[in-house]
Length: 108
Image (tube, rainbow, N blue to C red; front, side, top):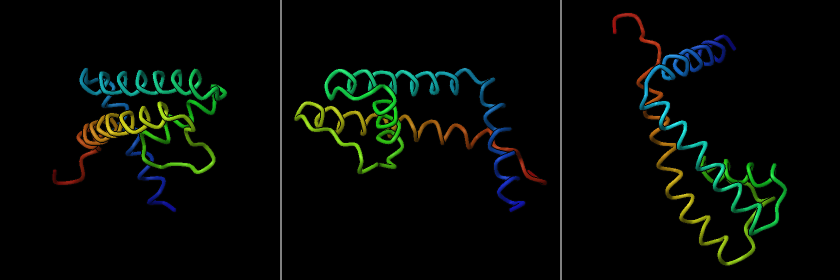
């Protein structure tokens, strides 16, 4: 249990350090924009509630997936494929950049 807390403390410390970096902030801004675009699209095309549209957008970007929500129209399915491919790249860039701000261990 202690290692979980230590990991969370290091994660939030890395986020705090990362927010000082303009490139890291730009990646976060792009992720927020991607989630907003996805949510607006699913709200308009699929007529989902905002919370469902945001939820699905985050699930698609993080590759978690959820069987309770799925696009039903052809255009939404095509959009989701392109959205996921581009968004996964954004998430990988975020995680990669975040890892550079991890707390250095002794001797590093």
